[in-house]
Each structure stands twice: as structure tokens, then as C-alpha cells.
Length: 321
Image 1 (tube, rainbow, N blue to C red):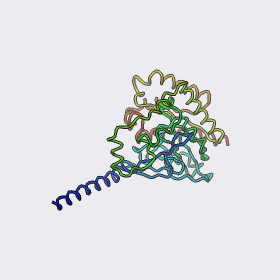
Image 2 (image 1 turned 120 degrees about the horizontal axis):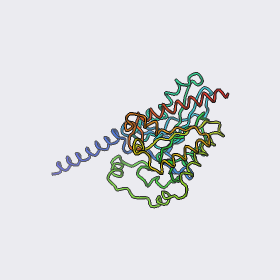
Image 3 (image 1 turned 90 degrees about the horizontal axis):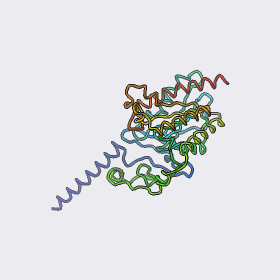
Image 4 (image 1 turned 135 degrees about the vertical axis):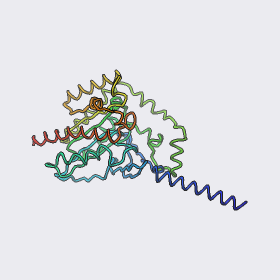
């Protein structure tokens, strides 16, 4: 009887170990990216992290950017671009480090500007669900990193983004503030336990007033910050998948899009609206990972179009001396 008990216990322990190791090795469970709170920005990815989720490598540097460490000094032969954005720029767990928009750009831009710069660095300051006010606060905290151009990437929903808040950190399973003790614990918490609503978030999500106007003001401040720091500024907006084709954006989205276009004209902001670009592709669905986030093909298209404008902006700046 004791032998049977010992053998059974050994089998259970063995299965537990195999399952734990398998979840860590194959999927990266047990080592999620963690977040830290910030009074102005709301939250940031905790600095200096490395992980691998579902086979995709993720590196977060000392400035909570997705990417390699940043050198303070910047040689004159190096072109630095700063991307600001949310999960679309960040790429999330579904995007390998080398397949983010910033990584694609850092490899493709050098061939277009080789005469002026021998090296290109594209910094990726982003986090899930950031809006223009989060991105403005990040820029005010850390500066432009001597970037030649600041590129702000938003999506249609960001026009309605609420004020920065740290409430999800440590309370929402998508914004953990510490590593779980086991991969099995993370899987249980993520896929078995029912998520608990954060009651205080309701007040934030019900923010009143002219929310579109508030976010346009934040975009304007980012533009002005870039100008004062001697950086060019480019605004990019990607559409939701449901906006592509017929019936197209909803009425309130059309009005907000018109406001944004007029705002950019008045402020003389370089602006790329990707709705017509995506509408002109044969298979827009092939660009998306889900209803809002892009896959590698989508990131490549975004990079190609941004690169065209960046080359024009850099060429114009060069002519001005």
C-alpha cells in the first residue's frame, strides 16, 4: 500500500513539474510583464524586463520602452526617431521584438537616409491602453531623447481616451505589479478565475465634458513640446477593423475624425490617416491580429507609409539647414 502511495505521489509531482516547466518554456507563463504606477502618466511597464510569451521575445529598457537600452549621448551620425503610442506601437505579447513597428523602421530607414546618417535608432515609448494624455505625460517626464522626429501613433478609440489612471495596476490581471509564484498560478488567475471589476474605474470611464477636445489639446501639446525640443512631429492614426469598408465609421467617429483633420490643418501637423490606406488594400482583415491590433503585415504597411513621410520631413529639414 505504501509503495502504491509513494508511486502515485511521485507521478503527481512529476506531472506537476512537467506541466509547470512546459507552461514556462512553451508559453512564457509565470513571467509576465509587470507594471508600475505613476501619478502623472498613470502607469508604465516596469523598467529592465526580459520575457518570452508564446514564442515572442519582449525586452523593456530602463525608460520603460519596448527595446534595447538607450545611450544618453547621441553621435551626429545617428538618426533617432521617437515613437509614442499604445498597444499598437508596443506590439504586445503577440509581436516578437523584431516585428514591432519600431524594429521594422530601424532596419528599413537606413537605406532611405544613408547619405546623411550611418545609423538609425527608433525608440518605442508605449504601453497598452495609453491615450494622448498618457503619452504627453511620458514626454514631459522623460523628454524627446534628442529625437529628430517624434511620431505619435493613435487609433480611433484614442480620440475618446480617458484621463491617465493607475487603478488597473495590480488589480487587473492584464496589469500585474509582481510575478506570480508559479506558471500554474498565472494560468489559473488568467483563465479560470472570474475577473473582479474595479469599481473606482467607473468614474474614470464616465469622464464627462468634451473628451475629444481634451485629447486634441493633448496632441497639440505634444506637437508643441516636439517643436520646442527642435524635433519634427508626425501624427498617425490607425482605424478599427470595423471601420474599414461598408458601412464605415460610426457617425460620432466621423465627426471626431473631421475635428482631428481640421485640427491638424490649423496646427500645421503632418498627419497620416490610415483608413483610406487600409480601404485601398485587397484584404484589410489580413492586416489585423484582432479587431484593433495589427499583425506583421499590418506593421509593415504602417512602417512603409510612415517612412515615406519621414524621408520627406528629413529632406525638408536638411534643405533648411
